[in-house]
Image (cartoon, rainbow, N blue to C red; front, side, top):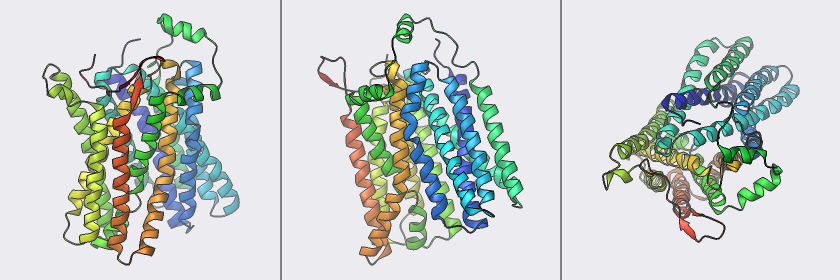
Length: 451
């Protein structure tokens, strides 16, 4: 089949944006309604969001299902349908909690579980399709485009939903959520329709499709036995743990130590997200330069996804070291610049890791690409689910042991920086085996100039 051009990548980006549109409503908008309008404990939506991450441990099973079927489009469309249903049920549950808390909570558990399952099915298969059909030289740029479109989906949905939810009423919440969910599903169907194709002329793929399919446990054991897949899974979990652990403590740190108002700390979060986008664009630009100057002895290497992954982890650790110093010094530290630098480092590392993930999904054969991607997606979801708990828990413990708030936050940032350094070491040491009897060689992540 023909490789995807930028138009096809953009269509997958539209589907990813639709996925993000539903997720942001359930994890952000419903969170706020439960806490503010319904005056429920903040722990409740926190546990529900954690549930939607926990359910994503099913990602390897979803990936295996798409491997066995040989097609990814039905899993993308079906997963988006489950996700849309979960979004509507979660909104209905939130409204129901006002009059019947017990029944509403039970329905919310179902709704958020469906959200997690929908993300697992559609998100995993979308990434596998992207990895399969995008040439090596375009993977960094493709990952940047798809993730930026997802972030745009977050922002657009949050803005429009916020506009139409005022003045708030339960009926408005249901109408807005149902409209966004149904529209997202329809748009995603139109975006991926006919994109994958219906048949293949690859003889190896035809032979593979006729071969007996192993059970899920057997396939998972085979993938876990691959040194690269296993080590990359550990890297994804550790790096995303460090990535997510600072999310819930950065704004409280800015307020408690540097005197930021709630509005100013929210703007600080915007500065960080702007840095993330800048980091993503930086990797994409480096890839474009490397592809344009592939004959240059130096410039052809600046698009190395391995280098951006390792370098992004190290830069993130240095930025967190800066935040540690900001906690010790207090007022006078260039906090906004520091947070922007953290965002740039996080964005660069993320795109490097995602591009490498796309490359490694087919390492060892395409028949297990879905289960590999699912395994890494599950590791990421687990890290995000517990990262916030670890970050806030470590912060509470540090405040209990240390008298000064700045010193307490500084100790937590130092710990997170150490985890990022560990992630850099793990990324550097990832290796592959060319055959069952070959010696282990160093794996070089692809560059846009790679053949």
